[in-house]
Length: 147
Image (cartoon, rainbow, N blue to C red; front, side, top):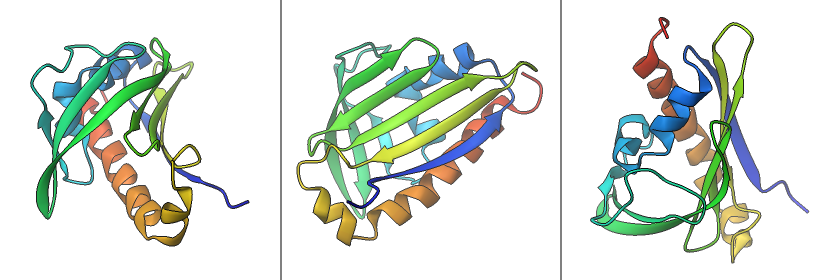
């Protein structure tokens, strides 16, 4: 069975709680999106995500579209993941470090997708990995080196 996830990791100069607050606010997702596709949360999105939260996002890859997400993994200040309609997940894991910084890992996981073979045969995972690396760069830049 092929590995059905890709991840990128970066040290961010901020406490995990501050980073998590940003990740749990859908209105802030366009600030860190390295793909350039996340535009804005749909009306009715919660101000702060919680376990089971549903939220829509306006997106654009060539053409504009909407995506619906549901929070399926949640541990305050440590882990948040949402699932798209096809079942694949975007996961953020935060590991606080002794010096006050945080190791942040973003994962695109299609092992739970309804049709994982689509992703196995497509360039999407490789493209998403590059986008995640850019997202982590943007996250790092938002907090700078003076958390």
